[in-house]
Image 1: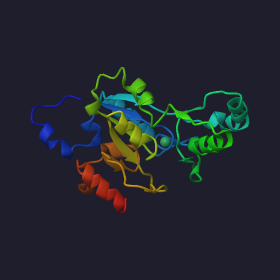
Image 2 (image 1 turned 30 degrees about the vertical axis):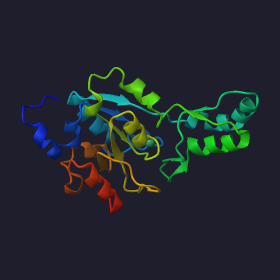
Image 3 (image 1 turned 180 degrees about the horizontal axis):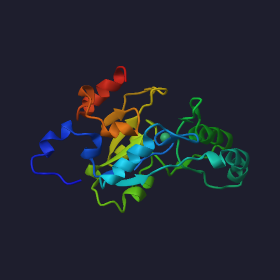
Image 4 (image 1 turned 120 degrees about the vertical axis):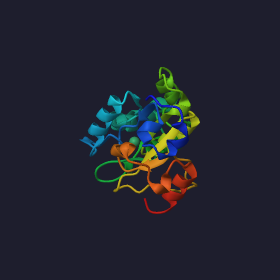
Length: 215
Ligand SMILES: [Mg+2]
């Protein structure tokens, strides 16, 4: 996005979509939930592409292999296979509420086999590095939009990019520890086009305070 001289000073008053030149989007819980597109996500993604903003999708949705994994992995691991997991999320969102995520299976396998997993997906920086490699935008002008405080946001921060949290009406984030620094919290992708809310206007500490209260 082209900016004129002097605009930087007023950046705090910009829409999120104007503050960054590139976005990485998590998919499950951000663009869709289960098999359903989330409200406004298609329109928001079309609008974002129209602005010339660089867009990448960063997902490690494990569901197709979940049952297979549960049945076959312990046998392979007892036979000496390496234990590589794509993420350590304890749960993932579904239209009926959170379901056990890869992390739950990883933990069960770890306990069953006493083999320590190597996590290669989010929040490992490796996955982000691959996604960021061919972007024209610098990391200081790139944000990840995700719904997981366990993988998306820490992964973004490890990779040196901003984290925007999607917190849908039906899923209040559970903060079991101090919340990470967030660029902003939005309810859906349409929130990238909202004028900044007073409580989170351009300030990471304000965003931190905001998530301590009612979203
Ligand atoms: Mg997600």
